Image 1 (cartoon, rainbow, N blue to C red):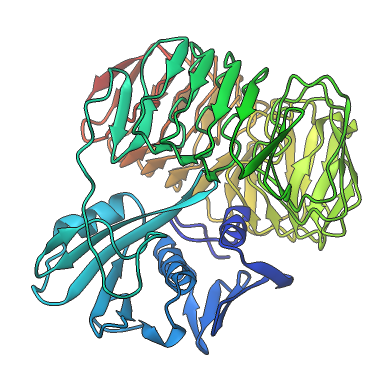
Image 2 (cartoon, rainbow, N blue to C red):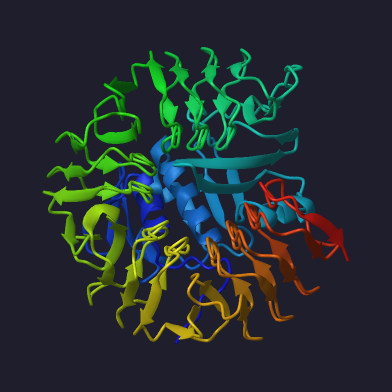
Length: 553
């Protein structure tokens, strides 16, 4: 059986969202299409490839998506399809511009790979050569480019909405002014607010509030956003539980996935013509995209308007008063975690694009499991025998479930959908996965997918020495875990892997580890000391709400 390899682009709900965010429509199961002015691109998500100008190209790794997204961006800017060439020997994409100057584009995956490309790239000294990367973050597709020309190196002028397709005018960002203490700003984007104020006035001049800029800021009670801001990224104020007042100025024309998720009792003053706030429910201007439903609304039932086609990620997060949501007939897609932590909810589905059975919401073909309703009363979940993908986080915090039966049709499990299912026993029939001592692994035991609280024996778990990756949120909420020795075979500990393991007292991390993700030991309140190899970069939130002493070895 094929194994899941770190950083491979597998068939997952996340990438379906990427295609839809770019505007692609599913014209038949697993086939997506976008029609441009003089051509179209067809994506075969099942076959992990796309077709452009009669040729097929792979979608096997993140870099492949970056190239696809770059083509999409250029075509939407108005470039002719025959001006874009792929498959050359000395670059990833060649753009034949209208003024006759060819542009060579070199692509890389966002993050470490792009940083390496930037450090190692050698400009030829002639023509225009560009380094490019992009990613989906918080519901918005971001990109970075570095443009090399004989006259100099630039950051802007090719891919921005205002950039022209001829007569290039390259430029660099102006230096950021000195913003007040507490505001971490780069190129006009508020990356992080690290202050402690209850009432925050974002400085004028900032144009973008970045994804997670106020993440989990429990001091924040009110925020004022100035008219200079044009974009509020997804999760900008996520988990700011005490935030009561925020404004959306007239200038904002872009917004990512629910920026206010987890703001339980927020009042939003919207002045932007690009959005509508209707009684505490935030939509885009056409009411096609449902962005945010305020958790403190008292109604027990909500009927989604028939204009809505997309229910956004986190949009109903922690709506504990809701007992029933009616999915109207025109809803075509739903972001992940749309109904997370809605402990009393069940759904009524009228959309032909979904199927709702046994408390589980599927896509219409029942090939993807998207959501489990906590208020459904179903404790033993038997997934449909057509399911190929269990979507990321779809059973998040479902502590009321006793068992989940994984059918033999399943071949892809997204970012651990079983996190914090504290009482669950997993029953597996899929040849792509295996269970040993109550712990779920992929079939060749190279990735630990999920360890529920029912698995530890006497507070310990024995991880096979074949495991290379401890998956995202793999142990989340495993309150039965007290001690763990990670074998030397493991190289990666993914984001949130041990979060909320409140009884974890001792963990041994080998020198073979190459990366430890953010939030890895979040709320590990019993952990007193962790020895980490000295070459590992400890990320800012790795030990959030965890007082463990970090020892370098």
